Image 1 (cartoon, rainbow, N blue to C red):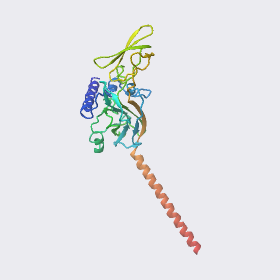
Image 2 (image 1 turned 90 degrees about the vertical axis):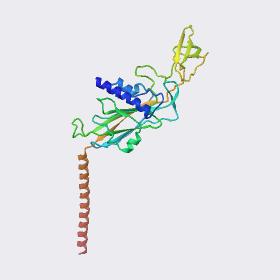
Image 3 (image 1 turned 135 degrees about the vertical axis):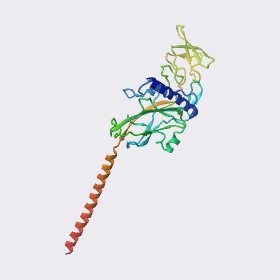
Image 4 (image 1 turned 120 degrees about the vertical axis):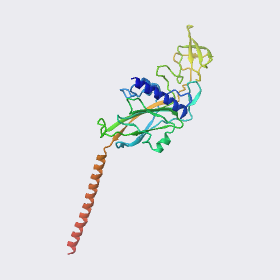
Length: 314
């Protein structure tokens, strides 16, 4: 347990370092390490990925991967996280910032992240400044990446090495499902359950807006007085655009600001076949004999036709 905590802390520090020195994104706090620290397994029994608990908006992603792979082969799983790059998000400091992206890939047991020696120069060039790490010491078939600059990395590439059933008895030559998730932008809920500033804040009661004041930090305090004279104050974080003004009449749960969320999370699943090379060789041999049989049949037919022609001429 202590080793696992140390590993997670190391992952957190490494992710921060790479985000700062590799692909720096201002005011990005949607770290996948939050999921690592709060969920032993990122995929729930109902199939929902842990990232969806913080990123409440649903956005589509795409998965590209080979349909079949051979043992010990290195292949790419590409998770595409498309979005409008002209959009901005509200940073933790209330200022406008570019969207960051992050992703998670859950492969069958035995599949692992390829080592540096196994990765081709082309993949290294594509993944420059990108740090991919196992989800935990126990789950080395699950990988996380991010947050990284969305404008540069809308396509997340995971270099993976396939297992060898001849060396690992737990792995079989089968068709396996795998899962991927990707987010763009910051989340709406922190792991503690608190709302981030990427939210719509609503009026706690019906009444009239009697005043709006701005604190030293830049947060807006909206005072609402009900028909019975009850006064409440609703805080709206810095950087959010208000849709009410002093004197307006509001209803309970009415939105007080424009929805600032420009991002969202999506998840998809696909299948991959761990192919037995002996089966491929057997199939090729079978095809060869079928082709050879066809050739002999054609030759036999031509020989028969020649004999028939000779008999007719005679």
